[in-house]
Image 1: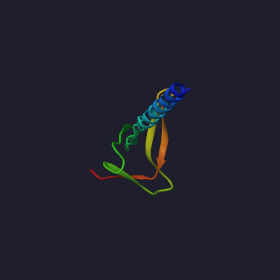
Image 2 (image 1 turned 180 degrees about the vertical axis):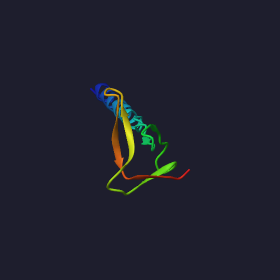
Image 3 (image 1 turned 180 degrees about the horizontal axis):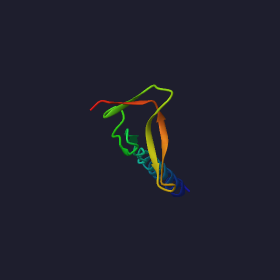
Image 4 (image 1 turned 90 degrees about the vertical axis):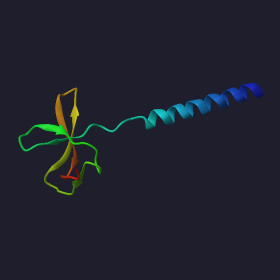
Length: 83
């Protein structure tokens, strides 16, 4: 009985660690900005390369949806470059 309990505890710990690693390994989506010509370019890392200042009438960054082939609004605001 003690062996079974130890085995179940080891399995629970292993599954818990595996779940934590899987949840933390999800990466953030690639962010794009829209240039004045209407083309989209990679924006870089937020709070390092740029920040999104509050602006209710524009979109700061976009994400790309490969299944539809379209860019989707991601974060509202005005992009301000830091670098």
